[in-house]
Image (tube, rainbow, N blue to C red):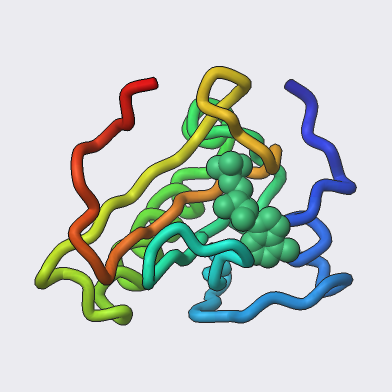
Length: 120
Ligand code: AMP
């Protein structure tokens, strides 16, 4: 899937629309989800034009992959979620209901999160 430069997270990265920032470094930007699904719901996105985890891990330079994954862990720690726990999730494609076609990792926490998938 070709990267869409007009997706909403591309606009956030370019500073064209605001976000409620949690963390930023040269590799990643983390911000609160606009429609939180848990008391803590933060998105972490890489600074680069990648649609999905498969796209990112195939195409991104090693330093960006390492830096991005470090940022995900750092943000979880910053949010003090290591204890009592948290969930990370990345949707890719139609079956996973990916809404924004720029790779993003959701970090959920702040309540008991229940089973991994709902059955419907
Ligand atoms: P996904 O379904 O995995 O693509 O998730 C996209 C997420 O982006 C949803 O949880 C949305 O609530 C969130 N979202 C969409 N627009 C914004 C925005 N402008 N700022 C923060 N989060 C957003």
